[in-house]
Length: 334
Image 1 (tube, one colour):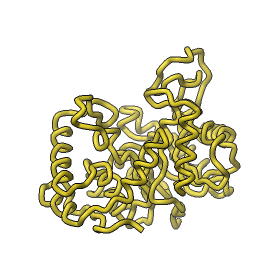
Image 2 (cartoon, one colour):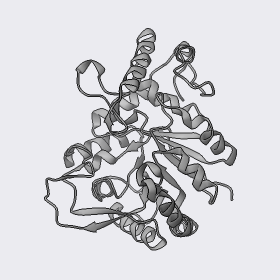
Image 3 (cartoon, helix red, strand yellow):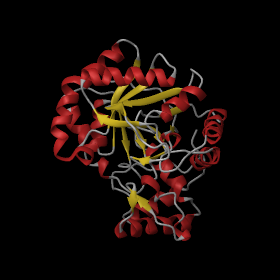
Image 4 (cartoon, helix red, strand yellow):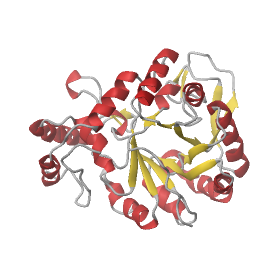
């Protein structure tokens, strides 16, 4: 089967924060962020039922025009529970009273997709992704969860695509290994890979990205700041975060080396982090998490910042870029 490449812009809006990830985001702040994105022509938004247990999708459903492009996800049912309104659960503050339950079955995917369409106020979405498959999430249960998906949920996603309710299908995950494992048994159009092909971490170049190029599968690069450490202020004294946890010493030291090369060339580290993944031929879009109009505008400025070729050359000479990593050209992107 020939993959269907999604028609997506180079920069997307990661909407987990609109589900109150870690901290509440007011309706006014969410609207201002979305309005700023749309005003700048940024019209691709990535969400999931898991983000605030429906809150992110509902907000986008209220705020987006039908012309905006959306990716959302399947793989978790939202089951009603009794929970205090101000509780922080699974990282979401003041989340709706639901508990996310993994369900990669045919019926589970069909039901959760229908619920997502209702929250989004849409008849279709541009990209549908199976969320958080892999050993990092499921540990010893991974083989059973992947089997359930390949035997059930994948079939549902194919049917939804063939019915025109979905433009492209794939996985939305934090580990490239499960993409290769799943691709050995099924065909996909796109993978959203979060945090594994970044200025800090490039092991995806060894086998995953070459396989995507060979198969014609598109890649959306999520988490370009590695959950914070490539955008956080190292001089503030506040903890630096990597993989949603305090960064280990070796990661902090590697980022310090990246910052030093940035200083030498007058380059903002977050600008380099946004631009880097887009140089790879498999990567069609980079999707940072955005929570406010200021963050939207800052991301747009970073994406357009000129970065000299000597910067990328010095990173490579310092052993901070994989030998096979393509580097952006030293001019403003088109």
